[in-house]
Length: 393
Image 1 (cartoon, rainbow, N blue to C red):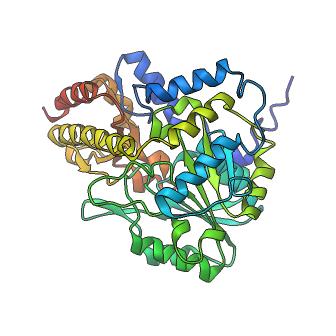
Image 2: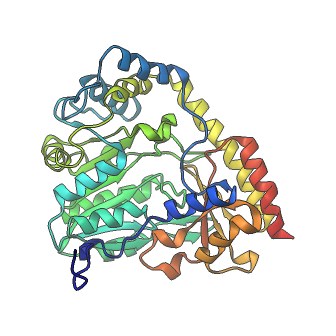
């Protein structure tokens, strides 16, 4: 029997309860609502890549522990992808590490690189695991808030510079950005790079939506900018690009010393994971450019369907330049509390969304914003749009 005098959950994690994703997904099941909350596709990725996983299973590849850094085929494929797309040259043996999805990559990087008391500057709103991982590492998170400007969320570079102190160890970036859909511009990234070099900072950059940029937006890896290759840990993932989120195959690319540090932490988390799927993802990364272009165009079309439906329902819509999420403003609907709105939405309209306030330290800053995922089949998005029209009435 445990004593009631001391909480069971340690104080670093005391602020983190069950994630909002679990709560809202359970609400979707209970009400039969269309789940546009959690970011997972409702169709699988390419059949040839699924078959590659089956083939690996049948051939006995990956059924036992794969190598700690990841199977050589995948590390080679990741390095080839970075070189082909961005001109970044990485040694597959010393500068690539395979992880159990991007979430583990971020956790391992922060646990490895942050000392207790170090400050970590992150762009707010941020994916909820960022805050938890910084806390587990004993770091102190310092948010720099992206705010609406001319129909999109933008980074205030003066605010970023002011957030960096002598205690800052690391910048944690995400571009394309979840949940706002912002894609940092070359000018913004250049300013970030100059600040990192000037203040001798490490950077962990989450680029899992690298293949989902729309219109005139361009994904520019931070590691391509002057002075950044050897101080940047770049995080990638197969889940978002190939629609196999359950496979949990991610990776980092970085200089050898950074990879060694991150691997030191990663080996005591999962040790290894996703053995057969690593071989399949290696084949996926070698798909022709036509696959990536078609994937991007398909998601752009889905974005248009949901954005139009949300606007017709009365939401203020921030059309995303990247990712597969749309952030909306509920104030035109006469609402201001995203939590209350999202908890009532399944009953009112038969749709589930996520309150953006969960991604903010400053909850009031995110209170009027709500996120919808458009990585669903177009008939599903059309039905959701039809249901949401009830709000306009």
